[in-house]
Every structure is written in C-alpha cells, then in structure tokens.
Image (tube, rainbow, N blue to C red; front, top):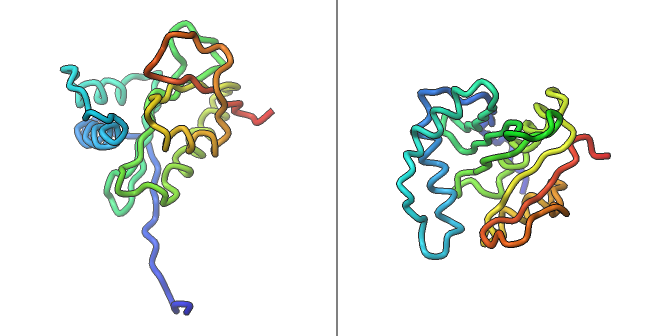
Length: 167
C-alpha cells in the first residue's frame, strides 16, 4: 500500500563548530565502541579537546551530519604531515550506530569527495580497524581499495586508498 504522504527528515552536512566538540567526541566514542570486542580501551585521551583542536585547526576539515538538529555523523580529513599536497587522509569517519544503513554514511562520504575534488586532491587514504568488518564493507562499496604499500606488522589497522577522480 502506498501512503499518501511521508515526511523524511532532511540531512544537513556542514562544517563542525568548536562548541560541538563534546557532542562530536561522544558520537565518536559510541561508534568506536561497536568494533572493539573487549570494549573501548581507555587510553586517557581527552577526546573533546582533541576534537576541539581538530575543528579549529586551519588545515583540517571536520564535517558533521545532522538530522533534525541531532548529530548523526562526522568526518575529519586533511593532508597528512609529509604527504604530497594532492593527497588527503580521512582520519575519522563515523555514523551514529542508531542511524547505520540509512544513507547518512554514503552522503557524508560523497560530501567528503566533493570537498577533496574542490581542494584539488587526487588520492585519499585511511586506516580502518581490522575488527571493523562493517566499515571495511562500507568503504569497499564507496570505491576504496587495500593500499598496496601497507607496511607489514600493523595488526590493528588496514590501510586503504581512494582515487578521488575515479581514474
């Protein structure tokens, strides 16, 4: 049966604000906790401060996805130290677990790629936790491939690359 109408909450993707750092850190914590089999390790990092610094850092983009004013996704990227200027590293990419498989990740990724193209980037890299099979599958659907130059010995993360222009 087809309904006569339906309301879909709009997804807004924009640059994160410094005042949102605590909310960004909390979403980051919830998302990361899903792929640590023994629970999220407490390494003493002050994540709200880390996110605040990233948001204010002039060479870093931190995007946030909001649905009905609620933070539901985040992405953070910049050119890594010592990397070619036409490359970008996706340092963080998370969707609130309560909103997985709703299209937020795909749209947030598309907005990242749009910004990379506007910034003249050619390649993107990321590292994904080896236990995060869901994220690995997501990245594969977006076109990411294993990094052929990954250094052996890193048993916690897999490196992946992305051709920004699809060449």
